[in-house]
Image 1 (cartoon, rainbow, N blue to C red):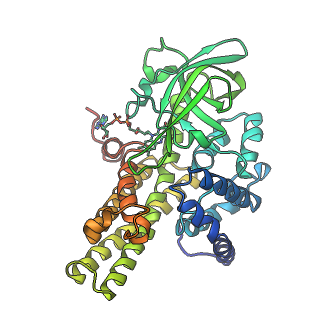
Image 2: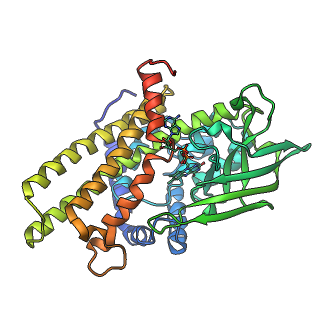
Image 3: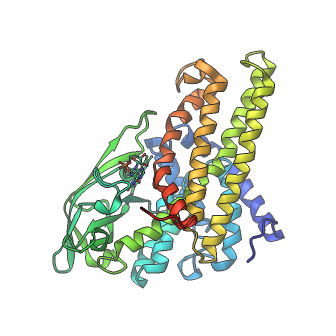
Length: 398
Ligand SMILES: Cc1cc2nc3c(=O)[nH]c(=O)nc-3n(C[C@H](O)[C@H](O)[C@H](O)COP(=O)(O)OP(=O)(O)OC[C@H]3O[C@@H](n4cnc5c(N)ncnc54)[C@H](O)[C@@H]3O)c2cc1C
């Protein structure tokens, strides 16, 4: 497949099928969007329902090999169409941790038993995953992590604490980085990658409220959790390599934040048109028009970054640099758009959900507060710039 942005007839037919589905499901999508992210209780039920519907259609596993429920190489362009269409409405039910991050890792490093056990229910939308990497003292410096897994015959016994575990309170399983060799000569050499059933005795999850009022991420405590050895992915003490590949996949999927930029820009456009017509627009309309045009240009660039990173990934080529470039660009654009929203609406933009005078139920204030986190999750902008400078520009690390 070349890097080609024209669609075939089959892709266009698939696009229409997805668009039709999204129209039918508009009510559920609204419930989830309005329930403070997909992690409120009502939103969670609707998210699970949506995941099963997507799974039944085979849309969650389009690119996987056929034996695990996918369409193989034929699914690669279809997944791009699916992502393009669904990002227009911020479709819930696509468990990115499982589908975008863990699945490629299992396909490349998992045992046959792990693939069958985990990929098939994941592709059917029956199982949700979370990511247990960060710890209170291990974020950017991830390989300083202290959670210990001690060999206990046919299992490991795991003790430690994870933090910022997104959706842990709604997840069935988690993939975790743990220290299996505290005496390794370099800290990244003593780490392993484990799959942990979140219902295991000893796993305690405490949701944390973010500044927008939502309970999206959690603290996760592991106290004497027994994890069968068959849940080790890759070799013992090779978890840093496995995690590196997974983090690339995470960044590449986060470029979706950039695809959502178009949606956020359209929202501001709607505001300018509405308030221009009813005389409530602050300042000179032409100034806002220029700013919106600027954002529209960048939203297109973000979308192309996403397509290119996806294409490199689908060809099995190194996409580390593109994932970092795209992640920085998309997350910072996201923040720029929400900043523009608060400038446009002024104090009115600070009214939050529930206020009867808030525009579109306080969406501007809400997205402003949550946009800042996108610069941190999946590796901060500073860390990505270091990767770009060293791997992309060839500059020395020190
Ligand atoms: C919304 C959200 C969801 C998340 N979800 C998950 C999840 O599901 N699972 C999970 O494991 N983690 C998750 N994280 C954690 C995320 O991966 C970390 O926040 C990130 O790696 C940064 O780590 P930290 O928060 O400890 O910040 P620190 O590492 O303490 O960094 C603080 C600041 O210092 C800067 N800094 C640090 N080191 C350097 C350096 N060497 N050079 C230049 N600047 C530096 C950083 O850029 C940052 O601005 C999530 C985070 C957020 C915000």
